[in-house]
Length: 375
Image 1 (cartoon, rainbow, N blue to C red):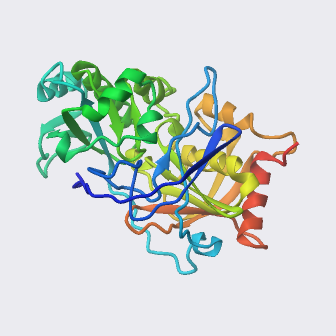
Image 2 (image 1 turned 60 degrees about the vertical axis):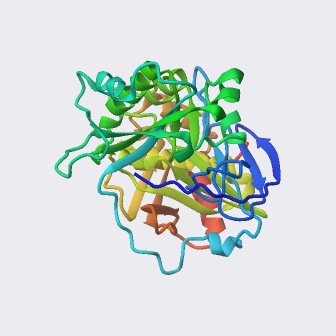
């Protein structure tokens, strides 16, 4: 769906520290870039470039965690990171969309178009070679088979953190010959994403390739994709945080977090700013909880009040993971307000809290209401 930008200049200084189960990386960047420090054939999507880390919660067996992106050198002040005083107009998503790719180190085991037809056989997912007709009704997948010269592998830390990839695969992937780009269109209901994910998984198995999620900016083996994106569904309800990435931007003692990948479910992306640095991990958990409430359809995903109630979540494992983070004094429920976010290119809602005090104090109080105070 998106044309690729292939020229990037970046100078990165990576300093990584791990707190709890979430990694925070501070990256100095000159220019506009996504991914890592390979100068050619980049496809910038987000700023700053993401550095993979561990997810916000764990399960039994332990769940892999989401990536974390970091701040840029001439980063804005904490005030600039706050939701604007005059919010931008919010245009809700009209469809669920996504862009995936499958990289082939050599020739695909099965010809891509043949493999996609086989993968979709017996499902409600329609497939098209090239662009779908304007009359096509989602869910459907469009296939573009491209040379890597037109869709480059993002190497460096992003590749090194790929899920389920062996050292041999990581070493060979930058030499991949072709990429099958799979553009998704889904109805606003998130349920079809499970069937589409099964098609993507089968396609990767048939062709013998490595999956790339452009929105979440992560590589996955076919097995890891199945473990995270398919096996974690419960009775038609996704474990939504297994399907998107959380990016963390740090400016001094203030943190902001934002999602990347909720558009797969026809949802706006989420952001939360003015977070005191010690509350970072809890803020990531709050964003995950808000996303889960929205994907479960508790209310239409637009601006307005929203109650996040951990005990009301339908996804049992995700609920248990989040409740495990709560202390004895936690109310496990908090009222917040969603307002149009700062990203004018992608439908985004900012999580805010009503009440008195500074934005940072309100965020800290909201997190404490939901998860309690550290013991």
